[in-house]
Image 1 (cartoon, one colour):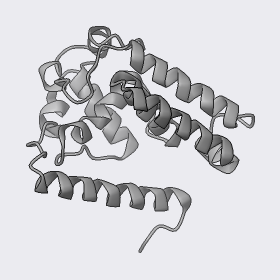
Image 2 (cartoon, one colour; image 1 turned 120 degrees about the horizontal axis):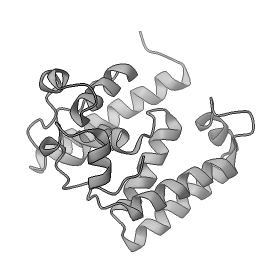
Image 3 (cartoon, helix red, strand yellow; image 1 turned 90 degrees about the vertical axis):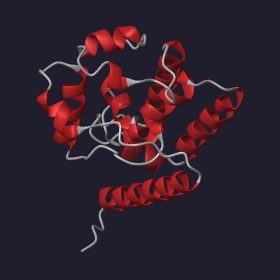
Image 4 (cartoon, helix red, strand yellow; image 1 turned 120 degrees about the vertical axis):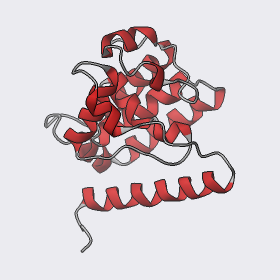
Length: 183
């Protein structure tokens, strides 16, 4: 039975997109072996980056990406590193952060288009901001996006090449400090 709620439809679309990305990545030879080992991460002490990663996944009822390109598999770690939630606003913040972290001139164009789309689609802004107060609208959403983008620009992380598997055992604070991502 398919979930016909907005969240259910969005989840189905994300799942379909992820499957397409993985399929294309596999065909182009861009997929990586699994990076995240949930069983290993669950054995780490509380407070370590790896344990926090898998605990956050469990709390959100999600499973880590175990296939596909490196950046896809490490997406959930960006949520842990930045503290952004996995709700629609958190996903938007992660994308803006990633644009900032791996800055290219055209990213300014992409970010401005994202902001314009949000401005034109006020109901989307209300939907994304659900749970953040009655007055959450386009202006606040745009503020969150710009702040996340700037935070990414100030970080020292390359989202395509960072190696969380080398810092699983460190505390979240140590990993955040290492990459210049203030909590």
